[in-house]
Length: 346
Image (cartoon, rainbow, N blue to C red; front, side, top):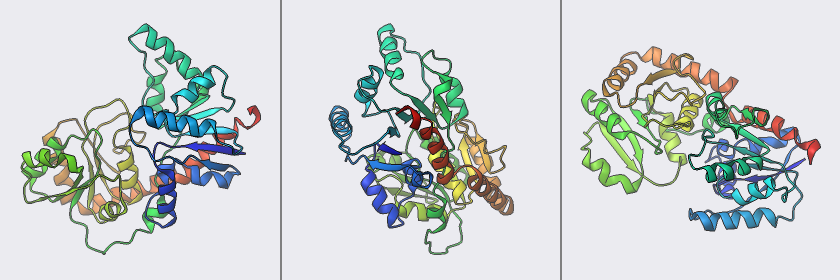
C-alpha cells in the first residue's frame, strides 16, 4: 500500500535534517514510521510562500498531476488542498482522504457557508484529532460523523531527544519557546516579580513588543523566526522546567511544547487548556495555571524552584507517559491502522 503524504511544511528539508539528527520526526505526523507497517510514502514537495491562493494552486496541481501510484491521500492539514477535498466530495477525485483536523468542527452562522461546509466535509473520508475533547466538541456539529473520526496520540520523536548533545550544564533556568497565542505579558510579570531565571525564545518581529514590557535582568530573550530549531531543543534539554503560558483557545495550543517536555523528562507549567489530551496534573508531570493568573504562575514557579526532587519526579513521570503513549512510533502505528482500513476501498 502507498500513501501520498501532504504537508504544509517543507518535507524535503525536514526529512534531510531528520536524517542528519537535527530535526525531530514528529513534525511529519508518523509518516516516516509507516514503512514499519508495510505502507510506502510518496512525498509532497513544496516550499510554501504563505500566500494562500498561490500555495493552494501549487498544492492542488502537484497532487492532481502526481504520476506515482498511491492509494490514499494522507494530509496533516486541510489548508492548501481544499479543491482536492471538494473534488472528492463530488466524487471527481478517487483516492480516500485521511486528514488531521486541528480545531473542532463548528456550525457556521451564515447558512450558505454552512451548506458549503457540509459539502466540504463530505470530501474527507477520515479525520484525525489530537484529543477526545476536540472530537466531542466537533460532534456538536451535524457535519461530524463519529464513524469517520479518530483520536491519535501525537507525540515526540524520543530517539531525537535522547540523542541531543548538550554542554552538560546543570539546569537552572526556566524556559519558554512557543510562539502561537502566547500570553507573554502574564509570564513576564510573574518572572519579574519572582526574580527567577527565564530563557524565552520569540519572533524577531516582536522585539519592540518585548522591549516595551521591560524584562528584568533575570529574563534572557532570544529572537528568531525558524520553528523549533535544533539549537532551541538543546537549550530546552538543559532547563529546569518548561513554561507554556497561553491565551485561551478552542484547540490544542501548547501541545507541541508539552510533548517535547515529556520527551526530555521536564516538569511542565501550562495555562489550563482542556483541549490538550494530557491532564498534566492528573498524570503528575506538571501544573495547570488559570489564564492570566499572575499569582498562580508565581506560586507554581516558586514550588518548582524550591522542590527540586519533586520537579525531577514530575519529569520522570512525564517521560514514562511519553514512552507509553505520546511518541512518534505510537502515532505512526495508530495512523497506519486508520489508513489500512481504506486499503480495501481503493
